[in-house]
Each structure stands twice: as structure tokens, then as C-alpha cells.
Picture 1 (cartoon, rainbow, N blue to C red):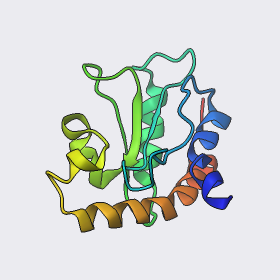
Picture 2: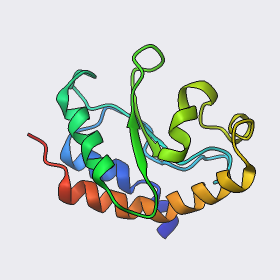
Picture 3: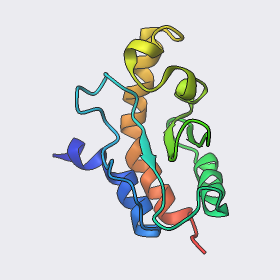
Picture 4: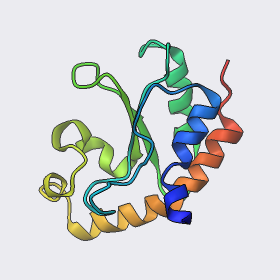
Length: 137
């Protein structure tokens, strides 16, 4: 039950601050925890993707000092959403995606597995950081 709750905490933290238009709530893959990296694909309801609100959130996430570093990314040529994921996977997001089979072509499986485990432990801490430190104007 705790794991089920943990996978949604960041979604809930963001949605409490600013209504989300994204249907994806869980950060874990439904096919198995290690089948894809933990990530949240999101956008805010009624807020343009170029809004400073996203930059403010990215700055809050970048300031977070937890078990791992996190990234908030957007590529207007590839997606209509932002992505929040562990920084170790960020350089590969738009070239290799989020699935294990593609990512293992650019990183060792041990690095991949360890990063997922650390991110899963850290997600609740990041959600608290967002709740306490991200000021929505």
C-alpha cells in the first residue's frame, strides 16, 4: 500500500499547487517497476507550456538536495508535456525514451537498476520539498 501511495505523491503535490491536465498519476511502470524509469509526464491545466510557472517549478526541483538529483524537462518539438525524472536519465529522455530496453544501450544495467531504486526511495522526499518550497504565484 505504501508503494502504491508513493508512486503518486509527486503528482498529488503538483496538483495541490496548480491543477494538472495530465492523466498519468503514477510514476512507476504498470508493466513492472524496472521496465521504465520513474517519471511523471505532466502539464498544468490552462497554463501555456511557455509559462514562467514551469521554470519556477524546475528551479525548485533543481534546488532539491535529496538522495538523487531530479530534472524537469520539456522539448516543444517532441512533446506537449513536461517530464519530471531522475537526472541520471535526463540526457537520454528525448533520444532513448524511458524504457529499460532502449536505455541499456547507453548505460550499464547496474547503474539503471540502482538509479531506479534510489529514485523510488527519494520520490516521497521530493514531493514534500515541492509542497514546502514551490510558491505558485
